[in-house]
Amino acid sequence: QIPIGPWAKDPTLKELGRFEQLHMQMSVASHAPALFTRVFAWPREQVQLLIEGVKREFRTRDLRLITSYRFVIGRSP
Image (cartoon, rainbow, N blue to C red; front, top):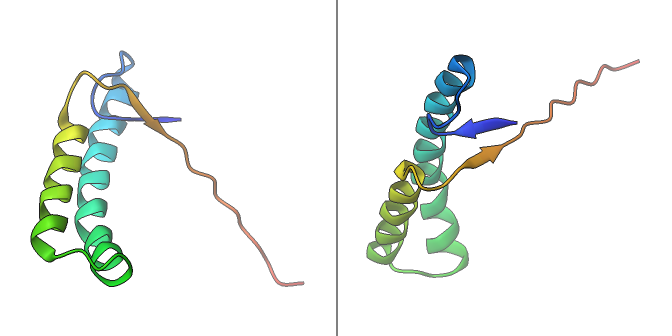
């Protein structure tokens, strides 16, 4: 599990959290517009407001958000 933001006490997890927070903010800004404008037919202005709100939530220190990753490696026989 990786924290989102620099709230962890462990220095290594704190640094990972900073990178993960930046990654999440960049991801929402690049993935959300296509989904919300094409699939849900939201106007771009409303999508931009949503993105700014999500970014603001990622920056708040009141939340202790975590994420996890699973890596699957396959080889052909």
